[in-house]
Image (tube, rainbow, N blue to C red; front, side, top):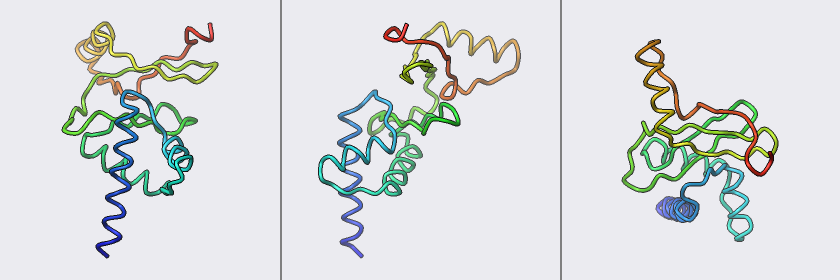
Length: 137
C-alpha cells in the first residue's frame, strides 16, 4: 500500500512541475495527459482530474468553466496561494478559440456597479467576452 501512495505522490510532484512551467497558462486535462504521454510517462486522465480538483480545493490551482462546449481550464496560482476571489474576466476568440485573461480595474468597476446598483454578484471566473483576437481580426 505504501508503494502505491508513493507512486501517486510522484505523479502529483510531476504534475506540479508541469503546472509551474506553464504558470499563467490555461491548461486542460487533455493538455496534461498529452504532455506526459510525449514524455513517455503514463498518468491517467482520472488521476489528473483528481489531483487538479484537490489543488483547486487547496487554492493552488484555479478552475475556469468557460462554456458548455469547452473543457474546463486550470491555471496554476502557486503553492501557498489561497486567492479564490481573484478578479479575472476572460475574452474568447470566436474564430481560433484563444482564451485571454483580463485583470482590468475598469472591469472591477463594472463588477462593483452590478453589486451596488443591481444587487447582482458577478462570477468573474465564468465571465467571458466573445469576439475576435488581434491575430484573427
